Length: 228
Image (cartoon, rainbow, N blue to C red; front, side, top):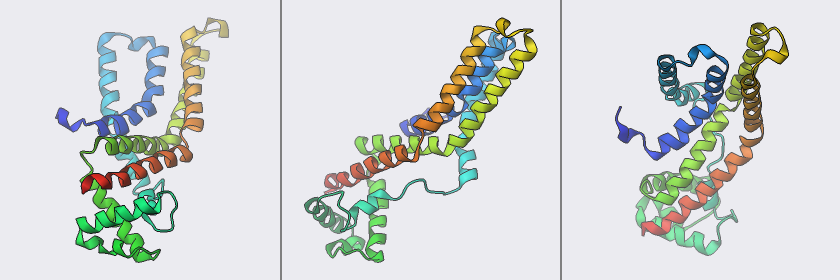
């Protein structure tokens, strides 16, 4: 494996989201099943677990395709009628973009037409390419990508947690003769899965994604000043 491929975006936005998704499986298996506690078995399981985390983003793309979870806020903020950015700053950005690319000359005559909106969308794509080395922009892009990947994984994550809770309950009741004999670690694993369900339901929301998307959009637009 080429370590340079494991950049900040892949690790924090993609790999981290995959680990959170699969964590209930790992916790349940290691806590509830004594048979897997030996070093060899644990090493194989961890290896398979880490390898599968690389497949999760591919699986999500196959399931959801190019479905958008938030609007193109950067393009919206560049529109003349949008109040998010002050008019003075917006006109300054228009002039800079028009100077950078001849295809952006439409920014010298801003309006709310569909043609101007398409120009804004093209400018956003251009900015994403030009700001790949901008640390602040990339930091917000990572936060946005992380939230987007979590939201894509939400229902799968809830299903995994519910399945692990059922597995723990069935295994414990079949293995031990009475509830009092069930080890404390089983209750811990069950409670952890319940907490993860609450995390998916309360912490992973469209509102959280929209907040990070808007912050990323504002940061991306502000980077126009650095392109002069």
